[in-house]
Structure formats: C-alpha cells, structure tokens
Length: 345
Image (tube, rainbow, N blue to C red; front, side, top):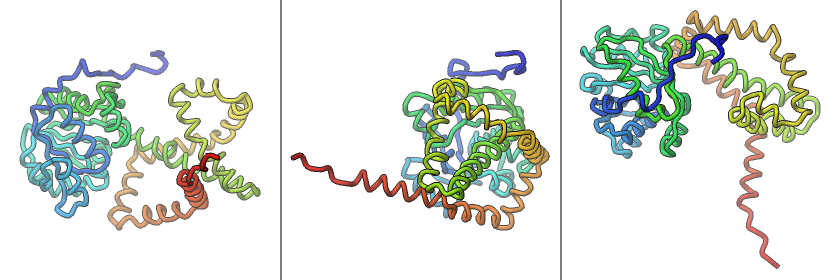
C-alpha cells in the first residue's frame, strides 16, 4: 500500500481464525431482522449448534425465527444464560434494551458483539466492565451476506475490540466474523469510533442522503426544463446502477476507461462544479456533527418523541414525482413480461 495512505489496517482471513472458539459458545442473537437472521443462519451453517434468538413476546419475527428452527426466548433470559450476546436490534433501540433487559442479567466472562459501533461510541450503551465488547460489522445488507455465504463467498468485515476483559476477545471476534463467511473475503481490524463515524458520514453524504438528493435534483431539473419524466428517470436514475456496478468492478478510473469519451469528458468538467469547495465544507460540517455526537442526539430525541421527523420525511420521499415515474415504468415492464407470446404463423 502507498505509504501516503498511512499504516494499512491488519487483514485476517479464514486461515487466521479458529471457528471452534465460537462453535463452543452458547450464542444469543438479539433481534431477527435483516442482520440478525443472517448472522444466526450463517453461524449455524458454520458449525455453531447452540444459538438462541432473543425477541419481545409480540415481535413479528418470532414466527420466522421459530420456522427457521431456532429456539426463541425473551432478551433477559438470553442475557442471563448465553456466553455471547450479539445485539442486532436497531441502533436507537439499544439504549433502553440494554439498560432494562440486558445489563441487569450480565455476569463476568460473557461477551457482547455489536454489528455497528454507534451505541457504544456515543454512550447509549455503557458496557458492564466484566464483559468483553467486540465489533463485528459485515459490510453488506443481511440478505446479500447470506446469499454470498451460500454461494461459498463472503463480504468484507470491520472488526475491533473495545473491551478485552478475558484476554481472548480478539480471537472470539475473529471466530465470529469467520463464521459469518467474512474470512473468505477479508476481516479488517479497526475501532468502534472509526467504524461508526465513517459509517454515519458515508451514509449521509454519499450512500443515502447524497445520492438520493443528487438523483432527485437532477431528475427534477430535467422535468422542470420540459423533458419527459420517463426520459429523465432513465438518464438520472436507471443508469446509475450500471455505472456504479462498473465502478465497483473496475474502480472509478477503470470505469471511466470503459465509458464513452463524451461521458468521460463531461464528468471531468462537471464533477468538480458540483462537488466544489462549498460542498466539501458541508461534508466537513456533517462529519463534525457526527463526531461531536450532535447527529446521534438528534436521532435519539426524534426517537423519544415518536419519530415525527423520520416518519414525515419518509412519507414525503414516497410522494416525490421520481417515485411515481419509477412505479409507472415498473408496471410497464411487468405488463410486457406478462403479455402472451405471438403464436407462430
């Protein structure tokens, strides 16, 4: 690696991990959503035989977990009985879940595993000083992680140790990550703070916030200038996946080498006009809000009030013109797929 990038992160693979460590533990998976279900299934297929799912009595995923063959119990019961607790509930639920149902039942020698560092980094969870605290953060959505695992592949994973009381937390974390299939790709060692802060920044500036507003802003610019919404949808949204897939496979420079000269020339001209010094200042301000805890305070304040801002913005997003155009074109494609073939003459 180029020395200008600093000291490279340590990377571990299956050969560096001992699956027998996690296989010998009684594991409690708290939450059975996208990540929780994938973790449970991958762990079981990797040889872990004692896995239990912690859910509220009225949880809608209880039947799914039972249908997958797992024992389901209350979170408090798992906290008291399991060696390893993997907390896969949503970030904003960690504070109350930990304080009310986990912390009172913990004992020395247990381990807590988090898939995201937010609740520990920003003090929503203050871990019991008698337990190991480990980050195992696969870089992908749950169903895709599962799909790749079943295909004999894996995703990259960020891993770190926040609290090593036993002196064996590192080996346990690597074993857990390998059982998810991540040792097939690469397990990179980092910290709770670096994973959490960069994740929040990336989601807000690029992956979700930035991309969504860029796409919709460009789409509406064309529509308001008189171009057909369907044409604008194809140019500003539909083709985005084609380009990002190419970037993922080849890198940005490799992708640019494979697009037209017209597209490449325009990209060099216009990219810096959009992401100019003002945009970079805004990025720095976003990062400052993340690192100071301001964003998490706003998140939790909205959560405690019943999520009025989140729900209102979610509703408004679903009502945008670009969503209606996309739904219309999806119906057009479905009608074409359902149309009977013309009989041969």
